[in-house]
Length: 320
Image 1: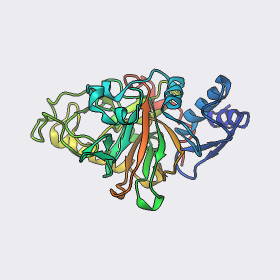
Image 2 (image 1 turned 180 degrees about the vertical axis):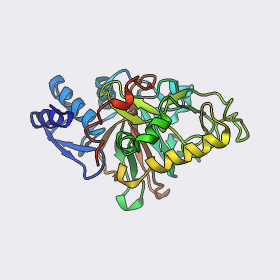
Image 3 (image 1 turned 90 degrees about the horizontal axis):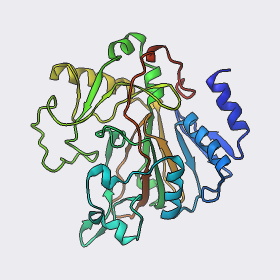
């Protein structure tokens, strides 16, 4: 039986409704309360999430403690303080909202002219979360606590890296197999320079982990493209010019609209995405309007390319 047939059968037997998005990835899961689901229901949710890469739940009423319980179901929570080597005291939103350390606040709210959370209201460029770590996060989730009208902007776009890989010509796949990209940690996703970093740094010697361009998923066994972040990236073993040319081609091939899903936020939305098989970005939104999202994430693995990667079957959502 094909992977798609197995996916369809498991979802038809689930105690909730799975409605695939009319996009390259994502599914809305309805008829479920994330606060009260039992273990059997979560197992079915997890399978649907792996099948569709993003799971979208509308009209939920999760608070911070509920989010902590949810993230524990997906794996071992990891705080962004640990990932960024920052002290919790620096994250004033956690004190402001009396939040546990597993929760990060994504907000444009300021107190006394200073940001209390992260990422503000500007554009956030394409990235996978914490790609500058040896083990990028696995499951990543956002809960919309307070959002402005959809017409104000702030959509989040997700890209199916399974589909982007599947669409590559065979000769290009052979060209990139075995290659790795160093993910330098010089600029953040809001395009701000990291403390102590310099735009004059030589990317070949900049500290940062190297991850395979072709990444094999540890649970689905399927391949995706590991893009990580375009800025401060370097293809190992290349000259700088060769690296830039290959990265430009790779990003141009992969970041096309047919591989994407746009999420327009509403209060009560819970979006869980597989950070191992996606990249995402955010449009800017009206800075005069308040927006508060709670985020949490699960510890991931060290990305790898399987020895038989080029002959592995495609993910069920890889075909467009």
